[in-house]
Amino acid sequence: MAALVKRKREEGLWLEQVPVPDYGINDVLIEVLRTGICGTDVHIYNWDAWAQKTIPVPMVVGHEFVGKIVAVGSNVHDFSEGDIVSGEGHVVCGRCRNCLAGRRHLCTDTKGIGVNRPGAFAEYLALPMTNVWVHEHHDGPHFTIKPDEQPSIRDVQSIFDPLGNAVHTALSFDLLGEDVLITGAGPIGCMAAAVARHAGARYVVVTDVNPYRLELARKMGATLAVDVREQSIGDAQKQLGMKEGFDVGLEMSGNPHAFRDMIANMAHGGKISMLGIPEKDMAIDWNAVVFNMLTIKGIYGREMYETWYKMTVMLQSGLDIRPVITHHYGYEQFEKGFDAMRSGQSGKVVLKWKE
Ligand code: NAD
Ligand code: ZN
Image (cartoon, rainbow, N blue to C red; front, side, top):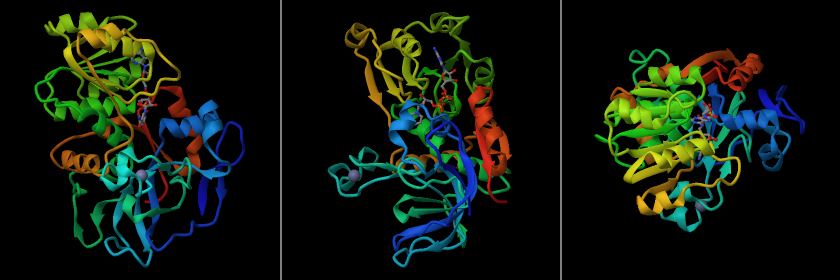
C-alpha cells in the first residue's frame, strides 16, 4: 500500500509502498478515505528538536482521518465492514488508575498513532476497536450527519481529531452568555470560535498576528478578530463595551506574549483552558493569577469519548466548521499540502486517499 513514511532522520516525508498493516483480534482494519494534516505532522516533516527525540524512524505518520472498515478481528463484534469511522489517535493502556476509572484522556501511558505506532497517512490503518468512533453504520444511521446536509461530510469527518481539541478546550468551562477570548487563530483556535458561538457565548474575541487567519476566524464566527500588532485586547474590550474582562480564555497559540495578554485581560474569577504548547518555560504575572483568582486548566487531547459525542451532536445541531478547511489535495501531492501548512496561509489541509 502507499504510505507517507518518515524514512530518514532529516527534513521531509517519503511516499513509499509498505505492507498493509497486520491487525490483531481486537483491531479493525480501516481503508483510509481522507486525512487532515496536523501541526504535529509538520513538526515531524520539519524534523525539529521535538520530532528528533520523539519519533522512531521509519514511521508511517498521520493521525487525523476518516475511513471505511474493511476487516475486523475475531474478537470485534460491535463494528462491521462498511462502517465509516474516525478514530481516537491516543491509544491508552487500559490498566492504569485513570483508565480504569474511565478517565482515559489522563492515561499514564498513552501511545500516539503516527507518532509512536503506525499512522493514518496510508491506504490502510489498523486500530484497536476501543479507539473507533463510528460516523455511519453500514446498515443505518448512527450519530451521523446526513450526507445531503453536509456535502463535504468526509472532509469534516476527517478532522474530528483537531475539532476534538477545540471542543475539549472550549467546553471545559461553561460558555453560555460568557465573553470568551481565544488567543491564536490557527485551525484549532478558529474551530474553537465556532464552537464557542454554538455553545452560546456572548462575545468571542480571537487574536493572532496573521491576517489570513484572522479573516478565517471571522468566517468561523468570531465577534472580533484582533491583530495584536495593531490593536490591544484592552481596546477590543472597550470597542465591545466590556468593562470587567473576559470570563473564559482559550489559549491556542503557545505564544508567551499571547498568554500574558490573556492573563491581563481576564475578569476576576476568570477561567482559562490552555491547549497551546509553549516551546519553553514562560514567565507570567502570577500575582494576577492569585489576586484575581484565575483558574488555569491544561488540556490534552480529547475526552474519550465525551468530546467525540459532543462533536457529533453539535454538528447535528448546526455547528458548521467547513470554512476552516481551506486546501484539498490528492495524497500524491502531499508536498503541496505541507507547503500550505508551513506557509501559515491556510486553515486545515485535507488529503484525499480514496473517493
Ligand atoms: P497553529 O500553530 O496553526 O496556530 C497558532 C496560531 O497562533 C498561529 O496562527 C499564530 O500566528 C498565532 N500566534 C502567534 N503569536 C501570537 C500572538 N502573540 N497572539 C496571538 N496569536 C499568536 O496551531 P494549531 O494547530 O491551531 O494548534 C493550536 C495550539 O495547540 C498549538 O500550540 C499546538 O501545538 C497546540 N496543540 C495542543 C494539543 C494538546 O493536546 N494540548 C493538541 C493539538 C494542538
Ligand atoms: Zn492508562
